[in-house]
Image 1 (cartoon, one colour):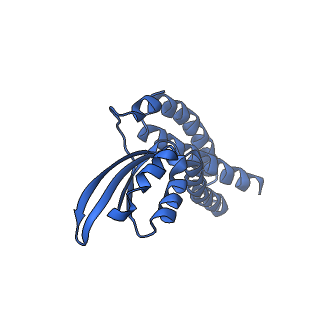
Image 2 (tube, rainbow, N blue to C red; image 1 turned 120 degrees about the vertical axis):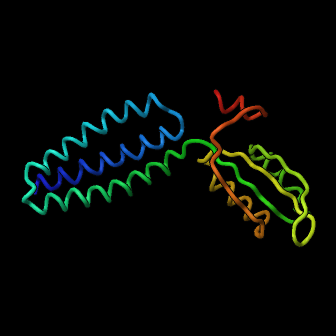
Image 3 (cartoon, rainbow, N blue to C red; image 1 turned 180 degrees about the vertical axis):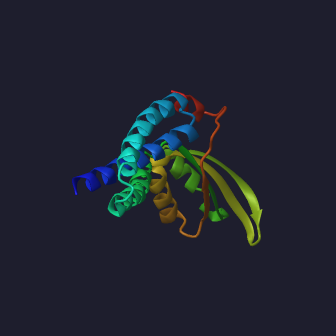
Amino acid sequence: MEQLLIIFTINIVYVSFFTIRMIMVMKGQKLLASLISTIEVFIYLMGLSLVLDSLDNPFNLAAYCIGWGTGVYMGSKIEELLALGYVTVQIVLDSEHNDISRVLREKGYGVTSWEANGKDGQRVVMNVLAKRRNEKKLYDTIKELAPKAFVISYEPKFFHGGFWTKRITK
């Protein structure tokens, strides 16, 4: 029973490290990703050797598989908590909601807005830059101020120019 628990725990830790390493690679943190991968592969080999030493025991295999699935879940939760990086949110709303850009700027978000033509008339389009950890607050503010707004978000990978660049590169 103790070995099952060890195999299960090792896989949770390994897959969580794997998830964090992949995030670091995607965010351009190459050195940190390689350091994490060193720890990750050590943990992986420890767990795999335990399973391979007793392949005839289906409970070890089950503990490995369940630990893997749990590790994927835990890794995704860790990623949500870390919320590294930035999000760009595009908001399209009726032109009468012109004051929303002012409110969002007062809350510290970077906002660029312009007039646009939609199927049903004049619209205001805004690009809003926010830290990912503030993403939910931003959505809540948008829902409060303009519940019918059309909202799209994506993660930017490159920044150049603008007043936010100084904040981002620090």
